[in-house]
Amino acid sequence: AGLSALAADRTGLAVAGTAPDAAGADAPPEVWINLALVVVLLGYLLLSIANKLVAATAQRRTEIAALRLVGTTPRQILAMMRREAAVVAAAALAAGLALSAVPLALLGQGFLGHPWPAGPAWLLPAVAATVVATAYLTVELPTRHALRTPPADGLRAA
Image 1 (cartoon, one colour):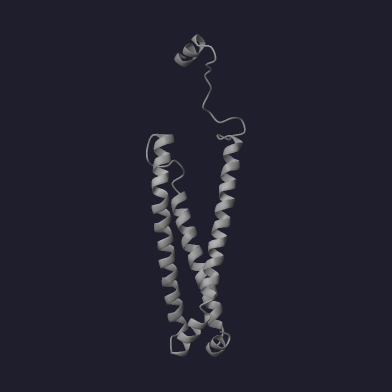
Image 2 (tube, helix red, strand yellow):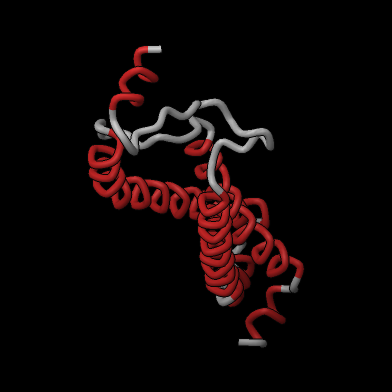
C-alpha cells in the first residue's frame, strides 16, 4: 500500500508484482537463450577435451605393449592409467576453480553485492562429477582397447 501511494505521487513510476507470470517462468526468454548458448559452448569444449584425452591415451599403445612385455599385468596397467586420470581430473578441477574464482567473485560483488555467485548449489558438484567422469572414461576406454591387442602386435604397429 505504501509503495502504491509513493508510485501515485510520481509520474512514470509503477509498482509491479514479483510473482512469476502465468506461464510459470520467472526469467525472460533472453536468459534461457543465453543459458542454452553457454551449455552448447561448454558441451563443445568438453567434447574437444575428451577427444584430446582419448587421442593422447591411444598414442600410448606402444608404451602399454612394452609394459606388458616386461611383465606388467593388465590390472596394474589399468590401475596406473586410472591414477593418471585422477591426477588429470584433480588438476582440471583445481585449475578451473582457481581461474574462475576471481572473475566470479568480482562479478558477484558488482551485480549482487556479495562475492559469491548466485545459482543452484548442485551446479558445482555436477560440474566436478562431469569432469571426473570425462577424465575416467577418456582414459579407461582406450586403455582397455590397447590391452586387447597382443603386446608383440602393439610394438610391431609402432
